[in-house]
Image (cartoon, rainbow, N blue to C red; front, side, top):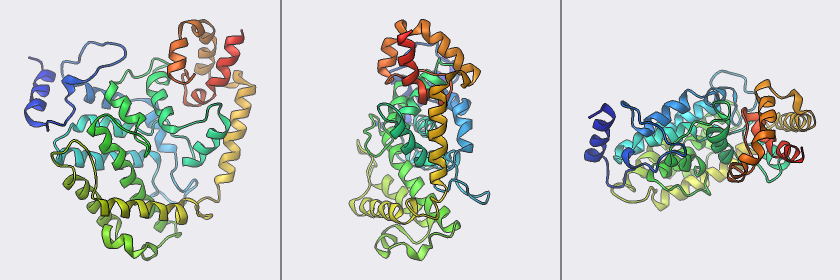
Length: 338
């Protein structure tokens, strides 16, 4: 029996009946020989941590686009906080920590620079719109490793695709990440807003602090505990009605007072202008794309026929670099005309 098989047996003995077992994964699109040491979800986690898109997260800002200081969150630190919250919940519920961590670390790989301002800009520019969760899936399926993708398991892809509020993850581990994402960004955005001088702790309505707590630490403790207490030995991940309503109310408060605050968003117009200009330039001048991307344009001439199904499945995106994945639908149309 290999080390991996021993680990899989321990999962069977220890994890909750509602957990997703590594040995029961629906598998990968391309079959691979199993690792003798790592179960499939641990292997996925490792692939995500070592991919280029994960390293790019460190340069992507969150609420403050050009923060003055070293302590503001980036997309990478946000991802790590989501992962930590999710692992704490998964461990307490005896669910699969490795699956939770893989989904959490990969959920924002397709997010744009300049936070949601970049996403809104690309949503207006791209034919068919742009959603960062869908781009995250494209990154791991069709962009990384020179277009070969990371070949992740079905469960990890499902969790990445469905981490938004409107999503419906198929596993409890995916549901944990979906909630942990909101828990993380609401709380760390409050912390950053206080640091940036656009919010004070006492500005938060008392009806929310009475339920959730009067500090970032207190609110995190309340939210994580509440999820665990209300999800133990149940086939769903949930909060109590009172805490959930308070969290949603706090989220609305953040939109009204921070996410749309002119001080936090004073550079947003420049960011949108930059993305628009870059998009239009590369659409008109694809020869200036990175060399690796232009190689895929050349290969695309031969691949159009053989990859029609792949194009349809991924909404017409196939690329080698993140920026190329954004432009590909338009470039694909040109390839089909050749």
